[in-house]
Length: 151
Image 1 (spheres, helix red, strand yellow):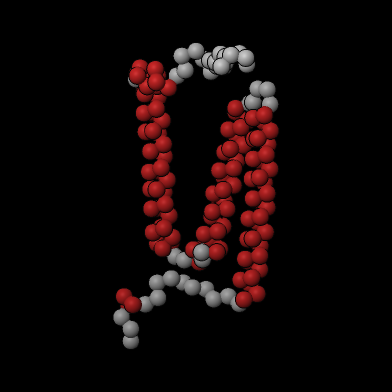
Image 2 (cartoon, helix red, strand yellow):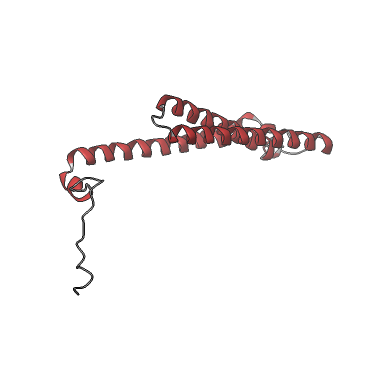
C-alpha cells in the first residue's frame, strides 16, 4: 500500500485522440477568429486616428475590447494547450495568483512612472529648459549659405 502523500494529485482525464484533436481544432479556429477580430479593431483604431478629430472615448472603448479579447485568448491557450483546464483548483491557483501579483506589479510601476513624469514636467525647470525648443516646434533656424560665386 502506498503512502497517501505520494498519491496522484491531479485528476488527469485520459480521452481518446479523436476527442483531443477535435478540442484542439475547435480552439485553434476560435483563436484565429478572435485574432482576426482584434486585427479589424486595430485597423478601425488606426483609421480613427487618421481622421481630423479622433473620438478618444470610442478609441478607448475599442482598446478595452482588444484587452478583453486578448485575455480570452490567453485563457483558451492556457486551458487547452497547456492543459490547465484539466487540473484541480489548487494547482490552477498556484499559477493564477502569482500572475495577478505580476499584473499588479506592472500596473504599480506604470502608475509610479507616470506620476514621476508629471512631477518632473511641472516642477523641474532645468528639464523644461533643456528639452523644450526655445522658438517652438515649427520654427527652423535658417542657415545663410555663401553665394555661389564667393567661397
